Image (spheres, rainbow, N blue to C red):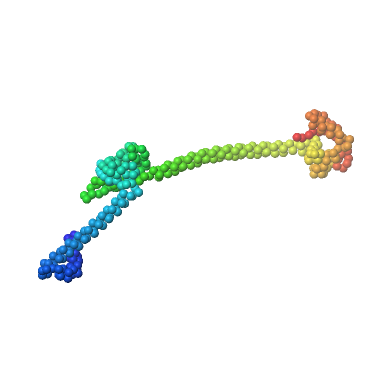
Length: 337
C-alpha cells in the first residue's frame, strides 16, 4: 500500500517538474528576486497542489455525474424500489414505487412498508424480511399490495436484497416490487382454460366409453346371435337331412313343383314315372305327367286347399309315364308355404 502511494507521489512530482519547465521562463521573468533551490521547490509544490486540486475537481464531477445517473436510474426504473431499515420503515422510494401505492414520496419516508401490504400477507412479508437480515441473502415472495386508502389492490412480486455496510453488517434492505397483476390474470385464465379442457376431455371420454360399451354389447349380442344362428342352421341342416332321407326312402311317390315346374322327386316317383334319374324330370311342367282328364281334379283340390279346406282323402287320377304309358294312381295334393 505504501509503495503505491510513494509511486503516485513520484509520478506527481515528475509531472509537476515537467510543467514547471514549460512555465519556468514566465516565472523567472516575473520573479523579483534570485531563483534559488528553495524557490524552485516552492514552485514545484505549488504546481503539485494545483494538479491535485484539478484531479479532485475532476473526480468530484465524475462522482456527481455518476450519482445523477444512479439517481435517474433509481427514480425512473420501471420497477418500484424501496430502501427500508431493520424495522421495515421506508428510508427511500423511487417514483415508480410511490406511484404503485399512490402516495407522494415525501409522505412515505419513515412509514412501514407493511401499511401497503394486505393483512393476510403480513406474516409472509415479515418472514422474508427477517431472513434477509439474518441470512444475508436475497429473498423472494408473491403477495397482494394496496394502493392509497386501500381502495385498490394488486398482485406483486417482492425481491429482497440486503445492503451490506462497511462492517459487513446489514442495516438496510433494498426491495424491488414488480406488478404481476396481468401475469396472475393470464395464469388464472390459463388455469380456467385447462380446467375447462379437462372437463371437456372427461365428458368426451365418458361419451366415448358409453359408445364403446354399446358397441361391445352389440358385438357380444351379434356373437350370441351368430352362435344361435349357427346352432339353428346346423339343426335345420340335420333336420333337413333327416327328412330328406325319410322322403328319399319313402315307399310313396313324392313330387314337388314350383310354378308348375318339377323341382324335386324322390326315388319312388322316379321309378313309377319310369325315369332314368331325377334330372330327367326336374324343370319339366307337372302337367306333362298328368292325363288331361285328371288335370281339373288336381287343380280343384289345390284350390280347395288354398281356401283352407285341408282334405286328406285320397284322390284317384290318371298319370303319364315318361314313355307315354298311362297308369292309375291315388294320392293327396297340398301346397307348401
